[in-house]
Structures are given as structure tokens and as C-alpha cells.
Length: 199
Length: 199
DNA sequence: CCTACCGATCGGTAGG
DNA sequence: CCTACCGATCGGTAGG
Image (tube, rainbow over all chains, first blue to last red; front, side):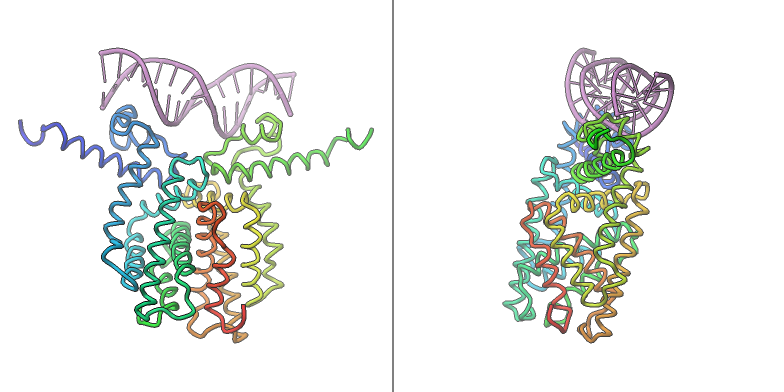
């Protein structure tokens, strides 16, 4: 048996990864409701019952796509190892990185808006995601204050809501303007006005 | 013929208005792709071909819904009669008003995200809407600068992108958090940090 | 992983 | 404004 014809786990894992990549792209282009399992499956070169062999329902596929992105981004942000201004810097770096990944930006912008409906399958996911994002950011601002890096009139809780909202709103403008918005630059200007240190 | 049984233009106009109201609500709840003409028609007490008598296609209905909201909001913002800091105040007042109109906030948040796809029927509409919103806001900041109300390190073009992005991002957080976000308060805090005058 | 199928629903049209 | 219908497409299942 040559490596090329080898079957089993390795092949199954590769197929799963391909499905997740194609699903991420189509959920971003068309939203969860607008995307169809048949189109995703066709892009992977399989039938749609074939896709359902790997992910039992459309909802399970969406949650798997979101979860995979979270694993990657959580590793990048690593809230346990960065603190204060350093954490804010990571957020602007993430915006810069996202400007190279239109598919991911589309996915989160479109599905987050859909998921504001309480009966959307990803509603609980995004509720939790926003709560933890704002909380982590508030902690970073509070640490910046401890380090004497924050202007005294900047409130950490308000600043955290502002920064997360700004990132989301800039993504919409960036997508609508066909990538003509400098997301990271606008974010840095906002944060610079809140700090007493170089940024 | 009593007024109650009167037919004609007045009745047609009332029916159109009812359709636009129900369409706005459902487009906001489910998005454009997720909303169906049958559900909208049923909520108006008519059949879906009956609805298509008033609006020839689903796309025409969406554009009519968006256009009606623009007429109302443009009258409120009236860029020709407010300038500088006064215009920024109007924007925060609009956020306060929107906190009483969940349907409208849902409509614009959900459909704007959908419309980032170039083939979405409202893509051109939102492209134009963002361009003019940012341009009007930039003008307001520039006027504030002329009036000596702007901190010297605040750039009008960047500040305009920030403010529009902030409004959009806060609407998503407000919807996801079930109206627990103080949109107007967070906006005012942001603007206050950019001005040299009371706000 | 496939073919073949299910019931449901879609936007839009025919004809009145 | 209605009933009745069109072809297309949906998520999911049966059975292999």
C-alpha cells in the first residue's frame, strides 16, 4: 500500500479540514441561512449526504467552523500571557492580520449580525464571545491604568466596549469599501488618544 | 358610501405602509435572504401574490423599506441645517432614539452585514450610505475644528470613520446583549474625549 | 462515501 | 386582491 492510496484517519481529517475551509468561505459570503450544504459539498467535490457523514447537521457544521477560528485566535491573543498595553497591541495586530483574511472577517461580521436573533443557532456562541471579549479588553485597560499608561479620564469598562465595537464596525466598512479602509491604522489612532505612552 | 367602506388611493397607501412595516420587522429578524414574502404577507393578512401586487419583487420591497428609513433619518439629521458639534450631538441623539426602535436597528445591522457581498441587492445602497455618512461626519468634525472645539491631535477624517464604526459596532453589542448596552452613553464618552468643549 | 428520495418552502407567474 | 400552480432548492434520511 503506497502512501498515496492510504486510507483511514489521515484522509478523514484532511476531508474535515477541507469542509471547514469551504464552509467558512460560504457562510461568510452568504450567511448561515443563505449558505447551502449542497454548494459547500460541491466545492469539496462530494455530495451533500457525504458532507453530512462528517457533520451531522448544518448547525453542527457552523459551530465547528466558529470553534476552529476561536481556537486559533485565542492562541494568538493568549490573554494569560499578555497584559495591559501589550494586549491592546495584540488586538491591533489581529486587525492587521485580518486584513489579509477576508473570508474570516466576512464570516464573523455576517454571522454575528444574523445571530442577534435569539433563535439563531449561534446566538449563545456570540453572546458568550462578546461578553468575554469585552471583559478581557476591560482587564487590559485596567492593567494599563495600573502601569500608569492610561489617561486618567479614560474609564476601562467604557473603553473596552468602545474598542470591541470599533473593531466590528471597521470590519463592516472594510468589507463594504472593498478593503479600502485602514482598520489597524484607525484602531491605533483611537488607542493612542487614550494612552499616555507611545503606541 | 361611508368612510369605513371607502376604496381607492387612501386604502392602497395604508396597505403599502403596513407591508413596509412588516417587511422591515422581518428583514431585521431574519435578514433579507432569511425572510420570505409569504410570512410578510401573512402578517399583513393577505396572500403573497397580493403583496407582489404592491411591490413587484422581493428586491424592490427591500429597497423601498431602506429608502423609507433614509427619508426619515435624513430629515432628522438634516446635514444642511446642523454643523460642527451640533451635528455630532444629533448623531448621539439618534443613537438614543434608536434604542427605542429595535426593529430599525436590527434591519440596518443585519442587512448591512449581508450586503457586504457584492451581489447582494442592497450592496450599492450601503456602499453609498457609508460613503455619505462618513463624509458628512468628517465635515462636522472639520467644522468643529474651525470653531476651535476639536482637540488639535484629532484628525477629522479618521474621527469620522471611528464614529460611524463605533455606532455600527455598538448596535451589534446592544442587540446581542438584549438592549443592555448604553449606546448613546458610550458614544458621548468617545466624542467628549475628542473635544475641548462641554459635550 | 454514493443515489434516490422525502416533505417543506422559496420567488414569481397565470388567469381571473 | 384571490386560488392554483410553476420549477428550483432546501435540510435531512433510507438504504446500501
